Image 1 (tube, rainbow, N blue to C red):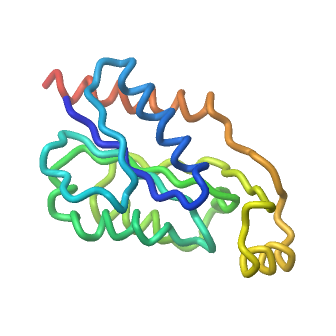
Image 2 (image 1 turned 135 degrees about the vertical axis):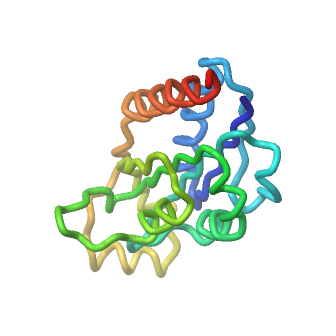
Length: 165
């Protein structure tokens, strides 16, 4: 089974999460291609697609959301998994759907997983720093790569079951 792992990542944190997902799937025996979301021209050659994005203000990066929207019909015919990385990963009961939830629903994704992200204040541009100063979120790397590997292992198990049918 051929799998695409595509990520929308501004500073590389989400790309690193995608790399962990890809390596976990490769260890499980899948043929995996890894691309930035903006570089994906087609999903036609893949049996499954994992799309991840950094989240800013409840929105996915444009390259990742456009990948999903531009290839929606093809994605509906494939096994799709999605993940979001960011400081806004906690969803409260009754909270309105965010963009990623709506995209996952629209393509019939099997799962949409949220992972905490990383905030490196020194890498931000002037406008981003102003927003961060106003919002004052926690700074640092809150990614849990063992949680990412565990999720990717569950994805691999599901894909193996699909491939066996």
